[in-house]
Image (cartoon, rainbow, N blue to C red; front, side):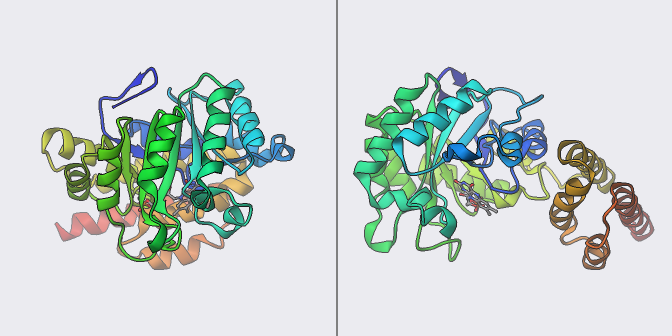
Length: 328
Ligand SMILES: Cc1cc2nc3c(=O)[nH]c(=O)nc-3n(C[C@H](O)[C@H](O)[C@H](O)COP(=O)(O)O)c2cc1C
């Protein structure tokens, strides 16, 4: 797959997830082989440019190229401005959000709500493509609802307007996150355009990744929720998809090393107080399914100090290791 000047030797990318795909998590996923990692969405509301939240979202310190920033909004001019703002602040690729089903976003007719208005889709893409020289990508769902599954039409107009690659989540807006993602529409999209198509939705294992790539003919797949607490999934997917090798879950010592590094990165990025809070959800995902995990999560949720949080995490993983050795 190639997007603008960027060629990719692997076929899996990290999906944008608000509240999750911050700089520390993106770097971790890239390290494990994600071809690229899309940032949390940056609002087109210019009044927010200076906010701490936005400043964190546009922080790319130490992030490998290409840095992909997602923008969200419904006004073509504001979208053009936020695209340029990000181009000036280190983005290499701009991704337009037309896939988010969140009420907060759709109420402003942004995100997946845009799929109902193809002429507005065209105007937004045209304005953003015109505004900056970077490759512009687009993320959509298959349509607004069952009766208006217009992904193929949107994909074609996106290609005409200069979109460099398209990610398609195999659900309509109305589906939210319910039911199973379907890949037939993604296959039709792939057949209908010649820009790279990235298939997204419910891909959480190397075998699923391969099945979706084979079925849709997509150029790459995009993983969101499956990577939470498992950034090494990218390595597992790459080895299986590219070489047919199924890699085991990493040893518990290695998992601890990654978790500990992730915690330190969160404390450094957000500061201690907020870092501890943000770390809680990641720790819940990392420890899901591990023995004693639910008790650990209860304990950790009342912890407010980073040193104490780190110590409890260390103790938890040491117990995992001891139990593992005893059981062997
Ligand atoms: C917590 C959360 C936040 C998300 N935020 C965004 C977002 O900001 N922009 C976007 O385009 N999609 C967003 N998504 C959708 C994901 O990018 C992805 O399309 C969806 O989760 C399906 O992929 P998955 O089954 O691999 O998770 C979000 C999903 C989750 C779970």
